[in-house]
Image 1 (cartoon, rainbow, N blue to C red):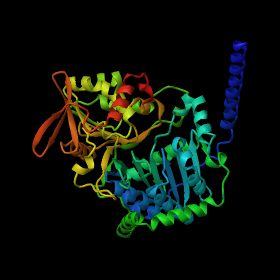
Image 2 (image 1 turned 60 degrees about the vertical axis):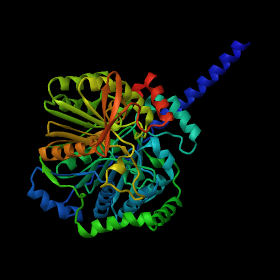
Image 3 (image 1 turned 135 degrees about the vertical axis):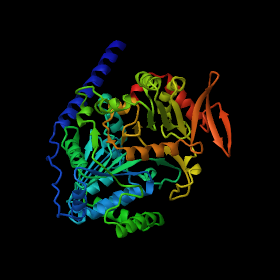
Image 4 (image 1 turned 90 degrees about the vertical axis):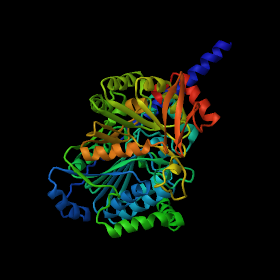
Length: 519
């Protein structure tokens, strides 16, 4: 009797799962929205065209590139590009929050769309479901189209959404981690920042230390082509195919963004955007603008999410640059899990005579304690091989006196993803040095061979690894130690500095579980 009941239950569950998979498959084969392409540039077409055309003509075949490390400047460069746009905005992000800075930037793209600018907004769906209302409101504008990467059919019910992701667990883990902002096909901003308060120094508790690259020149053709490939891919659906549009959402969004703009915090940012718009025809932040002929955009293809071929496209492209280091290799990665092969390769680079240094988050500073658990098992091997290993302190903002957030100094968490090789080759982008970025997420970034750019990035690495901001790890006897230097004196710490018991327990549990490939 019991066996018959179990068989019946199993059959019912099987039928439910099969039905869901069938429906989802049918849903996935629905039209994916009309294809579209980047609008062609015109030397006299828009304000950006007219300003940049003579400058680019004076630097034939060269790209103008500036690093953007300051969080407030990072918001201003995006808003400024949106204000100067007269033709198109193509925006691609892992997530876009409906918080203060997210809504302020939504206000800028709404203003651009009101001027007739065509806006294409492509978001990964893993966080978009939480912010569907903002996305639907933007999509209701005649000049704004919103599409989602690898979307769930369940939009409003968190249980159904979780169930759907569970039954397609392998494909649901494939996420679009790219970050790209393109204005008029003339200005591009790419790097590690998503859109949200923590990336622009507006979070009350903790903000990220991050890095973007601002670009003009021939590399824009690559940026637009990459965006088009994702926008028209089989993994992308219009949000209108997932949710019924609501006419009242757009007016409500306009009221919300205008309300945020009137707050003291909103005015803080708008004053800086207005100042940049008043003083500069084009704004790339305070750092130097470099002109270089050897700059390119590298990315995974969107097909990586379809699991058609298990190739680590971007990593395969970047790894030869790292492997070729002969004198100096510096890596910045907030989530650093080198794996057995990566640890072996870094050790081999050291053995060939190069200095190898890595900066990542300490357990106290990281926003993902579980990833730290995957990293800790490699620390001793790296240090014994001669790799200089640094971890950002939890109070990085406090020690670094030149950075001040909107709400005063707050804790910092590293989020930059970059490396520099032999003072010439470098990379800044969205890819972490971990299995998830290598195998599961789509990633992108800017690759360059330029001594001036590499020198600036190396200088930033040295600043971030200074004793006031980061610990340097070592081994004392058989124990791992953290060297902390402050007020001219050095001390050795023998436990994860400033990390709570809960964080240590999470990291310890993850360390022993066989889930490294998902981290």
